[in-house]
Image (cartoon, rainbow, N blue to C red; front, side, top):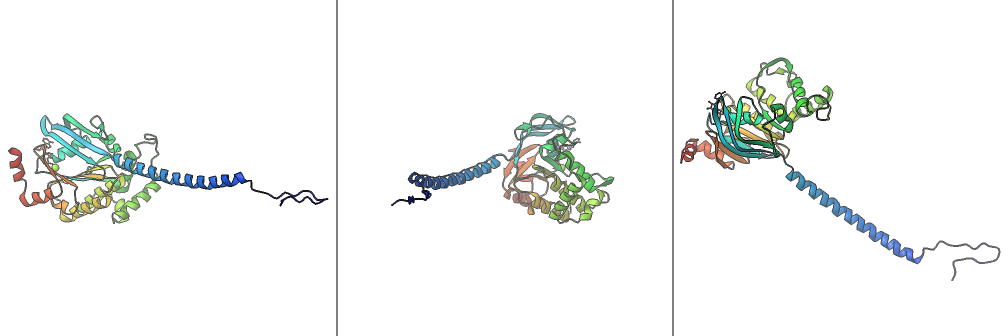
Length: 315
Ligand SMILES: Nc1ncnc2c1ncn2[C@@H]1O[C@H](COP(=O)(O)OP(=O)(O)O)[C@@H](O)[C@H]1O
Ligand SMILES: [Mg+2]
């Protein structure tokens, strides 16, 4: 049998025939395609896994090592060791005058506090030679640092300026990024106000002018939401926080904390820890971290006060 018509007067007609070796090639093609597909899939899974573990390892960390700090020649911090990573909540507790606010201010680089020994580092790089604004640009943020009134400056203007200087690197080009426009920022602010269940009109108020205690706290939480620091240091002042303010702070922090943000809550009272569950609790006493534990440590402090810690520290 031939596939070629050889009758007279006609041109031989050839029918396309798939050469035998092509079957092999086709078969190879199909197998090869499946192999390639499979390899792509495993590679994708491998890359995904690698990215995830890299992300885990790539969490930013604030580390404090044997920190000694003094004010006006008087040593307040006498060897503090402490670490906080993104995604973790640490509570620093301690009686009045133990050095909690000093620790917060020293982390942010307040010029009044002199570091005499030890180190504060972020992602392995020392912060000691950096000014407060440079520390903020690294992603370390001391909330509640603008309690003063600024008449004539609206909260939204203040937040946009802070956002541009912290997130965008100050003036245009500093970090190779441009400042956000008023319109872009308005969109971001609206999102954050919604997230925190705050009224849009709140952002048009003048900074802290006539703000109630609760409103000041809302303003501070909004700062945190807009600036999105990697590590937030919250220094709860020891006096004057009514229960509503405590709840505002706690609810805000709970909404904002996540894998991207680590929090250091500094507090004298256990109260706020009823609403925010820390992963770790540390006790600062006379400029030293004398005890660390899980959230149960806060319950023990509420039940027994600080005296037993003082006695234990003396022995
Ligand atoms: N500006 C200052 N001048 C002198 N001493 C100060 C100053 N600020 C704080 N101190 C002292 O530092 C110690 C720790 O204060 P602080 O860090 O505010 O403690 P806490 O926040 O735990 O109550 C206290 O003994 C306080 O008197
Ligand atoms: Mg204090």
